[in-house]
Every structure is written in C-alpha cells, then in structure tokens.
Image (tube, rainbow, N blue to C red; front, top):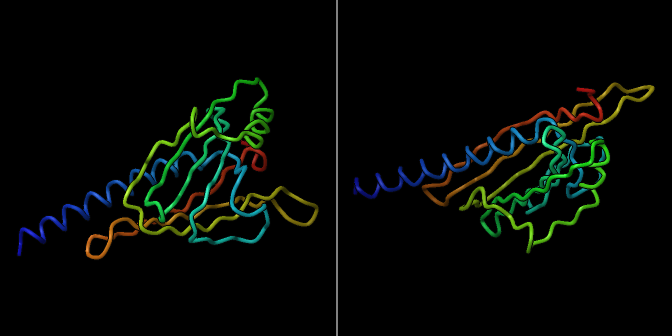
Length: 168
C-alpha cells in the first residue's frame, strides 16, 4: 500500500512542478505586454472564464506576438510566437493584432499536459480619462493538473504593466 502512496505522491509532485513552470513562464511574459486578443472585447469590468480560450499578447521587450491556448478539454497549455521587426513597436503591435498564426508554419509548443481545469480572471488596462486615473489591468490564472488523488491547483496574479497606459 505504501508503494501506491509513494507513486501517487511522485505523480502529484511532477504535476505541481510542471504547472509551476508553466505559470512562471506565462507570468514573466504577461508582465509588460499589451493584451491584443482575449475571449471578450476590452471593458473595464473583470471577466472570468473556465472555458478553453486563446489569449494573444504583444511583448514590447522582445517585439514578439505570443499566443497562448489554454484548453483543459484537450488537457494542454500551449504557446506559439512570432517576431516582428519594424522599428516602431506600435506598428509591430498592430501587426500582432492582425496576425493569424499558421498551424503549419507556426505550431504550438506544449508547455503543460495533464491540465484538467482552468480559471482565468482578467481585466484590461484602461487609459487615463478626464474623470478616471490609469487602471493597470491584471490576470489571475488558476490551473488544475492531475486527477483524483493526484490533482493540484496552482494560482498566480499578474499586474499588466502595459506600455500603452503606464508609460514604462
């Protein structure tokens, strides 16, 4: 019986390590970019989803368009990216907004398997208006990996230091 418990603990540890790596990777890439595509249009209200979704960001620090596909139905978290080389980063961001990734030439890289649940809560950054200050957006990601006795959920929240609004 203890060998079975040991295997379950090792599997739980492996699931936790894989989920932590995926969350850390996403967190680092979500800190400074602009969100260019999420499941709903930009609003000032937070949006929460547990359904599979695709999120596209433009990372100013790398001039890269990055697309994440979070899909617990398929059991995966994946990513793909493309560099843009125009001198003006805002032109590159516009290119990212209009870019449609090709499954043939720009396939997804699998960051996490065994994804059995996800919750994403996000709020877009908002520019300063005459009556409202700048609002820094945020994304909270919670991923569940594994099943039954080896399931684990990890969560992180990232403030979006969007170059368009905070002037970094």
